[in-house]
Image 1: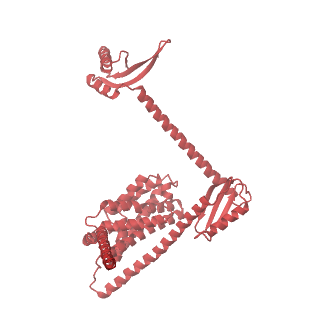
Image 2: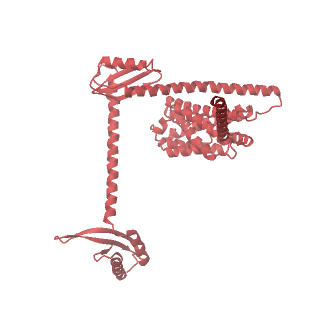
Image 3: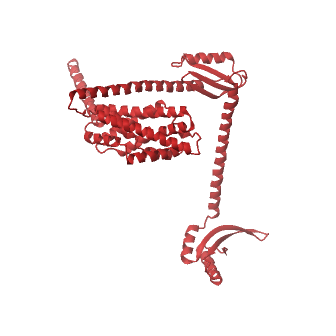
Length: 472
């Protein structure tokens, strides 16, 4: 009997398992599907409308560039974020990806022309600002926009995808669109290009333009992919030959964008892996009793890692072993490890060790000491506030002054303090109120008001000893 029922039980379990999988698949499809809630007509209208660059959009771009340049100039993150929110740069970039996806050559031309004009105007505006600005120091906000990393690529991909999905939803999600404008940071790199041109630093200008190009390409690429997945209808042309040529042109542009983007992504990923692995190697392997790593630098292009040591000299055998270990690491086979020690005065890097490294150490010490001083100052201010609060404990000063002003309208100012009074045999603490009266009040009236105020305060505060003094 058991043998006869076993196949049936197995079949039932299999059927139950399939049913559960179907339910899970149905749930995930309902959860993640965006086709039904996509408003294709409105999306096309919004994308084409945002491409436009004239009148209001032109002035908004100019002033947002000024705002971003000022924020970068003074290293104010909040100001830079504000500039990114009001910038209209995102429209033409989305228009490029969307027009390629639907084979719309006319929209593609408009997008590229408007994007080119926007970029040119942005760089020119930033250039003019930094040219006349008296502050030309490199700030952290500026330096951060001089070269792209793999994180910038990932932000552009995911941010661009979120942007086009938000635009295609019925009732576009404005918060997502603003969030993407902040995350992808299109405006600051263009301002940094203007800064680089203004100070004659072509490396800064080229690196910032490179960062902007990466963000733009991957936002457009994400828009293209999502538009294709959502099956937006292709633009129809009366001339079949033109339709075929348009489709071919759109496909060619898509390929030309995708291939360099993939190569760029792989290169940046390789660079990030190199930097991460060499950093881990230095932290985990470069260790010797009595010696300490004070600085190290990595160069992805030359595959050179420079390490600066101070303290006890490391034997050459140990250094050779480190070099063999780093070459044995995967993806670091061609890395050159150079070790510079403080005692090695014959090294060509000895001068750099005695200047850059020492300067870095002094800077760290200065910053740490400055932080200690600031912490102590903050502590002193806190203690002073606590002391004042302790001294004035038991006296509801705020409510007393409000009541006094109601009862004695000629009072212009009132202060309170505990005065230490001595007759040289003992010391006593006397609560003292200093009052400034209206100058139009006569002397006799002021003295009468002072007596009444003193009596009222003694009753109100239940104090026998109390002083009220008039001040000019």
